[in-house]
Length: 167
Ligand SMILES: Cc1cc2nc3c(=O)[nH]c(=O)nc-3n(C[C@H](O)[C@H](O)[C@H](O)COP(=O)(O)O)c2cc1C
Image (cartoon, rainbow, N blue to C red; front, side, top):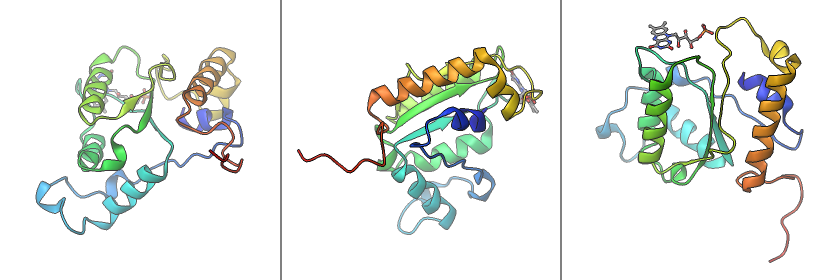
């Protein structure tokens, strides 16, 4: 779903798919001072350089997956996450616990959830790949509308390749 979303976006937007959850050590406040672990530095660098963060998570036992919550815990003290624009793409049919929990955690972390761009789509199971999702007119529209809503917030420059305008 995330790859399909990126595939539907204008070429002026670039996406980085973070797949390094397993490289993060277990969060420990005693390690979150001074020089933090390299994998945490890299996660924080990506967050600081991103205009917006897309989050999509499964639900495990009515909660957020521990590995994903661990990543969020490493970002609690990261100033780059305060006010960061976050779009939630929710695909798990009927799983509202993880979604509600995610929103509560993000609010507590002072992230800025872009509600107008966040969507819940009942994909149901892993049977649709990227191409199949893009080919579905209904999903295609939902994601394109989400991208347009994200762009309209100004969180992401509409034309990132344009030079900055003089004040
Ligand atoms: C250990 C485990 C616990 C799960 N718990 C829930 C749950 O509480 N609620 C739910 O909707 N799905 C639950 N699931 C389903 C996952 O969310 C689902 O596997 C994931 O969204 C990927 O979906 P797919 O494989 O059907 O595409 C669980 C899956 C596993 C492996």
